Length: 243
Image (cartoon, rainbow, N blue to C red; front, side, top):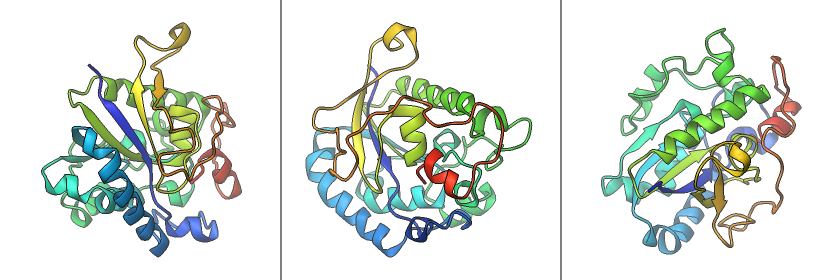
């Protein structure tokens, strides 16, 4: 049986404060760290108590890793493994969505398992990386389906994923995620309506996010994404990625 999945957007990071997308792989802001504490205080006695979480997956970005460590540290302390997965990284080509090289990350966060991260990371633009990690509609839709197929095959009963608003919205759920908000989803049987790919069912009461901080709006997967290669940065990153 496929796992129940808790999809989480990272808490506020420094680039979110001033919309400065030139910051490379930014850390959480002070407000972001407070948001993690609020998330932990809410989700631990309400959602986590009823779910047997056996794995935490994080985008290899610093802000997603910090969010996971702060909000789900109790699970990690109980032995739940935390692994990085390049498929859950952000969409845009801006510095804020360009990751830190793996050798540096492994030194900064020794508690994270980086062993299965695609060696291409953080490359998004080379001929090998662009079809997988580029910011085009075909690349992001394909990446969304790839990570969902991977999740659906997991043996755990429940999995936490900490990722980015834009990818969660246009690549995975069609839903907007504000900083440090989450939604719980189940996999639909088969490959979704009309064979259109892996489908998800939102838990009741999660329309505005588990924290109630997110917009109750639905957009088509791939909405607003370019069809062809081209850098997406600056103000465009906010539309394409919701960084």
